Image (tube, rainbow, N blue to C red):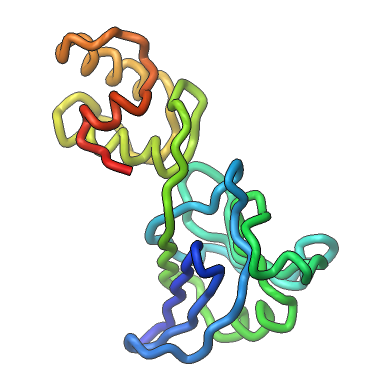
Length: 184
């Protein structure tokens, strides 16, 4: 059985698990409030030896709306804090240890809060993915729920707003989230 990785954004902790048993836990740095880490279930899709500011190893995650991964850092003082641009940072010795044990396809589960901002054309992230999913479930959106707010998403939002007698803006605010059934 493949190993799995569980990341808790609140506790700034990564757990390497096998068959629901924690093999080892590591402290990590996670996304800052303005540049949050993605929440959800992903896979490791690329592994590489790196250097410079990103530490010694890189494991890319299958996040559809951007490039996020688990990597080392040359700023060990950042570990345990919410300071990254969304990636998961580890001490270089820790990321090297995890890197050697995981394979491409390894499941990565990231839990934590989803950041809320006004969602407009050009927005990306977990919230947009939730909006797309809610619109799809209600029959307004036929695209892929990829977390990228583009023309098709905006058109679906406008159609939903018009049919619900909501001011048609093509943008999604906090009130619209509640109306869509998305509770943060």
